[in-house]
Length: 261
Image 1 (cartoon, one colour):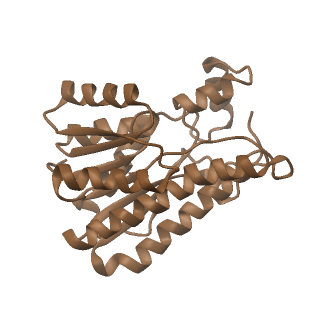
Image 2 (cartoon, rainbow, N blue to C red):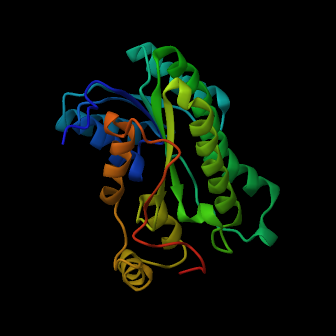
């Protein structure tokens, strides 16, 4: 199926690892042009090199910590300078720091909210300003089952994702008349590099994680990055040009309730 992403300019906030990297490769395979944001230049250039191997798509890397608003603006400005417009924005950057509300200090709270919500909010701000000029676009915010309440030990993370869902609804409600769409993809339990690192610090290896996934995931297995990429590409594409304000669940039927590990 032609997703009509050829030559579309897609900005990925957090495009160097995990689902962000997978989305970047998926967009490139469909002929889209890319601006990939991240903090680690080596990771960023690895993705750029991989894109060159699989496609003729043009892609650039923007290095910056999007906890700082100047770097949110810088990411969008890089797309404007290179391509003259923005057709899509994906907000994937996030951290899943574990802490119950009774144990969460101010520094942890701000680290989680600045990384997960503040970066998405201000990337949306500058992307929308560009899209208002160019005639529209698609914003996809990568959510989590945690955004619907979350587990006890993910208090700040759950609240940051819940606020991201409200951000998605706010944009979809107020900018549809400008042909600017905003949608949310609910990830389930995916073994991204950050998830492996987080759980590995608690003594879990990949095999034990996958075994636990087979026990708790309603559809019988842990999810992969590849399970989620098609949903994001769909929402970025013209095929979904009447879709906005949607919560698209790619969670394998899983909803985080009690802690599963």
